[in-house]
Length: 156
Image (cartoon, rainbow, N blue to C red; front, side, top):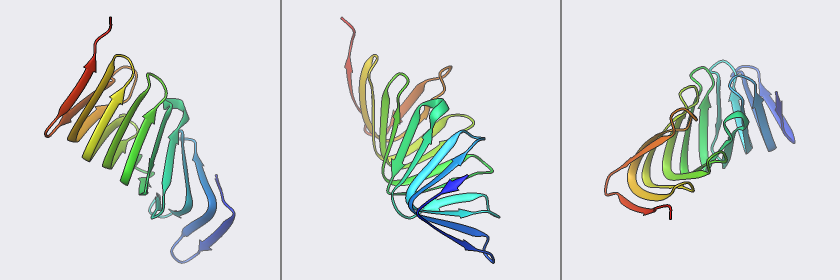
């Protein structure tokens, strides 16, 4: 379902434009898409925003935000650009980048540009130019490459 302070439906383009606290809640995948303006292209199965956007996966305890982005509903793929930040609540971690692609079924992320990754347990901070990572509990891993700088604090 979708909500917003203002709704416009373009019958020809089959596009629903939501404004003012726009929110789209999906069931499969379990994802919420929020922003000031969201365009839901029904025929193309895509949601996009040229304004700041947030993607929340409650079941995965993951929240992502960026200056703009799009979600391909058929492929369950999220593409974000501009000051991207992804946070995971379970086993807290944070990933920042200029661009990020999040493949929801695989819980895989690919980040490019000014990549910064930090996790709490064990404490780890890594910077580089690109990263690939997996967010699922059975495979939590991240690989950062390109002029990597690392800070690790071992357990006492």
